[in-house]
Amino acid sequence: KMGMVGDEVFVETRGGPLLIIFQDDRAYMDGPAATVYAGELSDEFHWDISQEL
Image (cartoon, rainbow, N blue to C red):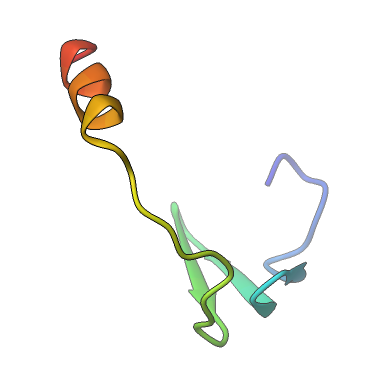
């Protein structure tokens, strides 16, 4: 938050408007759930990221 917004802020996303509410040390999000991308990850990708752990 860094003092740049109030306790509530609307963010425009590809999935629709998202309301972010800051309360104490937590942030809550409220808005529609929408698919903005669908795809598959390759076995090679899964292997690559497992090696980074």
